Length: 460
Ligand SMILES: *Cc1c(COP(=O)(O)O)cnc(C)c1O
Image (cartoon, rainbow, N blue to C red; front, side, top):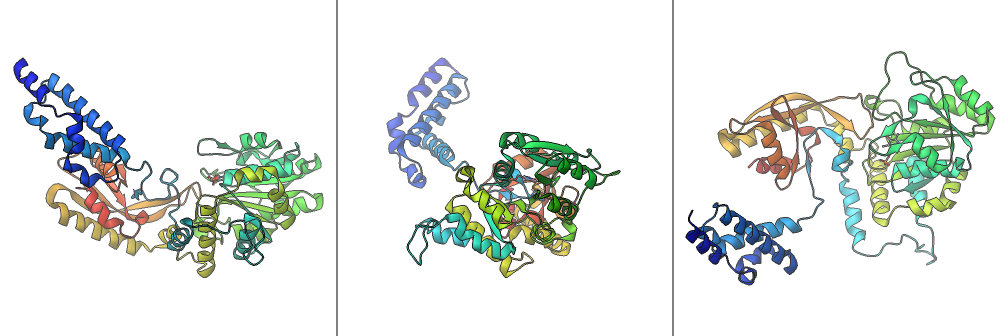
């Protein structure tokens, strides 16, 4: 590359204004003028550097070539940061992928209301102001078959609210040392307890806790017995834990309250996922049952506190409630989710419940079609094989449960497994897969309808 040809290339770089006037922008209506200009400048700057490095010539400087790059770059710059992603990981409640996808009924409810006004705080019969949480409480309490309900932004908020209200004056809250859990990042029971003002009374040991341990705490003045689902770990071997039924039996005569942080809100027990459920804890007589809206309930992110009316009423009246109350979109989606559970208690309308329940034969048949479609579309670029894998519930709901599933293992003679996984993640729509033993595994159990075709195109 001579200096003269470099100089010619520099002179050939189109002016920014010329690039901005180019007809190529018609395909990029979503890009505003400032973003167009920024993209042109960035592309021109990169071109200058390439010419200086001897990597670009006059031929790379035509208006058509440069503007095409600027359009592509500008469109990428304004693409939403949060996008619909295809979950091929086999982790049903994938926290990094936003946990539960909403049901068609919840989506419809949001679509029907979100573009307009919603009677969040108005009684339509009287025209008077009412409380957004009272209104949904009645509907929710019916579905959950409990006395009363309050909804917060997430279950961490519901737990904090409960502790602040019931023991924020420093009252003793007894909890087993085996349940002092940390759930993803910053949710740590001892920290939440301290921040709420409650006085934590640790009972039992890491692996074994007995009724007499809680009884001693009650004798020493504890006013709340808190049980927390271990969620993302399990203690196996020489273990003992006190059931929610036993806790209620201990607390009643002492006038203490029982609060159960269930984590995942399995409404009715599902023997494959463990024996805890909202129903069981309410039937046992827990005063408050706390659970997430976007774990096994399959709804929007929120935290639900269900239980005794006097206790819920105290939560609702507390100043912290105003800080953790959910917005209208959450309430609308949650109501539709609960009604879907009411219509079909097996969860047939709830995507995550359907994924869990889908028979292995179905999943395997879908994996076979995916494998065939990949070969059909991409020829010998990829090799595919249907393999048996284990899916998991994720979301800290049942750490030991493995759900038999089927995946398409993809390999290529041209690309490493990591390169294929990168390509999938960067495609549109992005596909998130696992890499294991040098193969990309596309677990079909967590694919939603329509995803199969998208996975095939994303491999391009
Ligand atoms: C997941 C979980 C939480 C936190 O719930 P979020 O809805 O994520 O705030 C609290 N407690 C337990 C036991 C959990 O499993």
